Image (cartoon, rainbow, N blue to C red; front, side, top):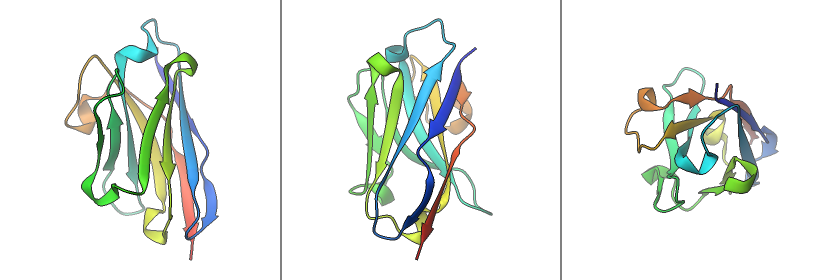
Length: 125
């Protein structure tokens, strides 16, 4: 059973940066056969797509509103996907989730095969 564990969240001052990590374990398939994605959910709001990287690492997809500040990357040898967020602002406060999809490029959250429990990011103004 695939397990995803996020880390790297916390409280940060506006203008700062964070790098979130998500490690996969428990899969009988190779990590580099998964599309990996990040979503976020702020209190009282729906889950929102942030970024996606397919198994080859190219192409990546970043939500339009997040381009320029959000960077997704992956280390297949470490079964880890990262999300770097620069110039954080209070509107970035949310729980950030990673998700995995085997050999596919999902267009909806429901199409992902596995989700992590999330890591909380709180941006202080």
